[in-house]
Length: 585
Image (cartoon, rainbow, N blue to C red; front, top):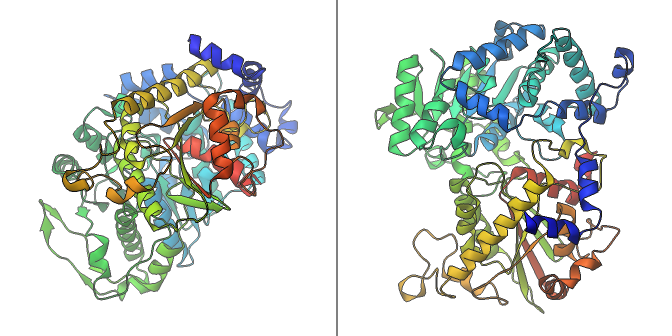
């Protein structure tokens, strides 16, 4: 805690500005009539008062053995909001869960079906820049005006049921889930792609009774305090979205969790299919270009194709009836999903898919920003592999050195030391850590506010990241640590021997810095060389730190600066807010 206080004193006024930035907005703007005219930011501030905290998560954990208690509570809120569970059936829902890749799978699926001229709804989480990103119509976040209208309509409807226990309002995610259902119904979408929040069995989206089709993306370890500490326990949770008679698809999983999914499906009378790899759908045809980078996206695309095809088939779509289909048998006691030739609508949908903050690259003059919200062990492995492969494909500049920078944060109960260890082979020259706070002195953007943590907590967390990184560097044996016999890459390493030659500045150690917010971190990394991100005030006080001073000089002179931003989708969202101002409009 002493280190945190020292860090606070390093930036005068920081503690005060943080408190101002995170002061909860305590009430609706006046009367009901005035609420209708309230701004989008007013609605978001009120929504933020519903953010959950650690005590609520503990309550959820205690109740997880009784899914009915949670799902019935969500159904009560749904009825209070003016809907019945049966009303959701008309949304023709595609329900998707998984540990990694479920958002990308949803994005692929939605884009494919939109190509067929269908009006789509899409509910996802978390948001990156603005909360309205979570509720999309035809791929675009709903407008601030539409968000504001639906928010206050739902808020005031639920407020009618307020009693002495003050439990009239559902928590943040539950409220947004209810709001999404209302928006999709009132906007008369043809279908809704719904991404599970956490888990599946007890997730509030699981009040959906009759989806058209379900999907399970790659499984791994995450949210262990809520879902369990093994992949098998997590698979049991994910399989909770299976419904009787509703087809479900999953990608290839390790044998243990795949067996759990199979058993859950059999118990529920759910026909579960294993997706063939994307290569099987490419045989005899052209390769399928994807709008999202990274080898791991091929698995997500394969799942999306099966979900889209199943939805279209059940809706008796002419384009799908003409597909040539073969069913290639079974694998591991699971039937394989059909192998078919993707239609032009499907091909173009995969190619045109955009999903910000996931294997995203922004090139700005000498700076290249690599953005990926990986936050689990398996997704971080994929992120490191994608980053290193991207570096190897990039053109090496002439006339100066390349500098490689890691910008990292991790939150919740995730093991940041394990995540950082996976990034060591990437050979960064500098590691930068900061909270998921865009600016410490701004109270204008409520979308980025988080009332579940304090300033001390997030700064202490960043200092712990820095300490983990320093310990990993100290254990490093030298430049050949990641080389196998004969100088080749260690099996399974994300870069290979070519990667070791990429960094001219440091061979076995990395300088590290902690910043108070994302803006300060980007200022130091970019040194005014990003043509779009141009903060008005230079951080001269930072240059008193030896690493900051020498690093600033090196960054200003570098021919190329490569920056990997990872560890948290909220961190990536804050970076995008500053690098792409148009996303806030």
